Amino acid sequence: MTDLLWARIRRALDRFHAAHPWDHNAHYHRWIMRQLPRRFGSALDVGSGSGDLARLLASRAGKVQGIDADPAIVARARELTAPDAAVSFTVGDALSETPPGPYDVITCVATIHHLPFSDALIGFRRHLAPGGTLVVVGVTRARTLGDHLLGAAAIPSNVAVAWYKNKGREAPRPVSMTAPTRPATMTFQDVVRDTRRALPGARFRRRLFWRYTLVWRQP
Image (cartoon, rainbow, N blue to C red; front, top):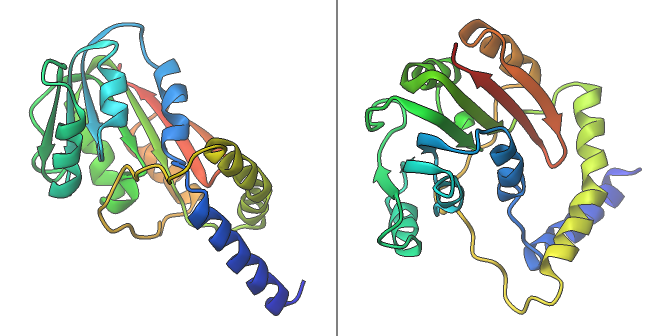
């Protein structure tokens, strides 16, 4: 495939997805819930965005705390959350300003690559209650042939899901975050290596749509 043809394909895909947006992170929310107990006392959602996952966690938890560095999206999360819901949102840095726990559940979706990775994992471990569960959905930088092949395999699925989720919708779905994003710098191999040092026994899985998942339970 020539560079010119590939560039044309990229532009066509960009136009398609601009007209058919969908939330790749919310796609994994139901999977996250399947990793958690049916009921738990408290949860912390790091990088909570507009609060979709925090409100979902509240269907099982006694109390949920969301934290995000972007004041605008935290304000939006508060607007979308019922006053009587057991959910609160804080503007702050996840490493230094997390409301004290401990928490039975900590979730972090597409946020950890914005933080010092090992420091974040150690912080999560410190805030997690004994027997608690940490679930991370993250993004990595493609480096190996396998990375690029998995990314290429996701393209047709991404188009199909985008078309299905937008079928019959007149206006694009609102985004769940507004803060500037930055590309991941760590590879999947880097993530596995550093996590094994900080959280022995963590379980990893590579996913479609340019994501990986990490689950760890506090002894």
